Image (spheres, rainbow, N blue to C red):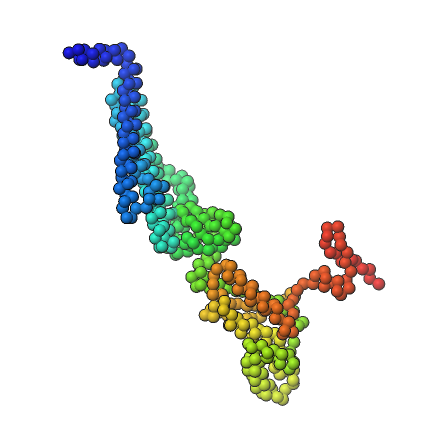
Length: 428
């Protein structure tokens, strides 16, 4: 009986101080929310994570970085506060309604973030599949996230305005033009992503070159709005996704899949050094293992041709030239080179002569696409050709330098900026 009287006295005392009763009840609700949060995260979440980590398909690193369950656990204290706030006495209906709406908005936001984390985990597992390089889905997942966040924002807005989501959507229908303008880049990027994926234009790992945006390197990431390229100087270039549809770019994937990389470089021959070969020059070049058979067959071909023109002038008859012989030597040399891919095109051709000489172009493919090995093979070939050109009586064209002009007697003086300027000579 005394215990009931004691409780009745406490209630009467609390009735004299309503604000104290309200604070006490509010504190109890907050403590219950903290306790529920502790139980959910420290007991339930840890238990579920340990259970998942024992499964064969689970990845501990991914689970530690992206925890969907931990985000869902944030709903528990919000539910406790949303339902417990109604038991707090002497609390105005307006404050109670605001707290409930805030808790409900927090629940919506937490669910949206949890779904976003789940999509991130799904993308990480998908990237472990070799097919992900050909068909990245990061852009589509970002679009799904955007839709989820928009729906979440509408639900939060509807909670505070006390309106249905569909009513808000009907109101936004009148703002379709404005929404199209706001999400213009998103719509363009989505269309571009679909086209890129459908036509297999770009994959992660492709080497692309886009001079208009100073991009020259490997594609390391593809998202809804941007494509990230790591250039060869290790800088990063971000390309808008729709630019890959509207602008031109070069994709080197075909070269990498073929396993061969093209050499297309010319040697500029001094045209004054081109001449018919004498018997002495031919006998000297017969010592070249690659040219002995060529000179023999070529002389037979020329002899047969000249016999048909026996009654004509000797100037109309064919003769061996040092340039043609050198061109044949280059072709034979490349056919024997271990770094040249013999299954691809191999052409040694003359280009249009110019004031800078006669270009003799080499068009061939190496067996490797690796940059370092490719440059080594190319340099090795041209080192040899530039060194052996004088054996054919040819000269490589080079613009005259100061030492060349000095040898022919053109006087020079050194200016104050350490550059060579010719001395002006008065005409006699």
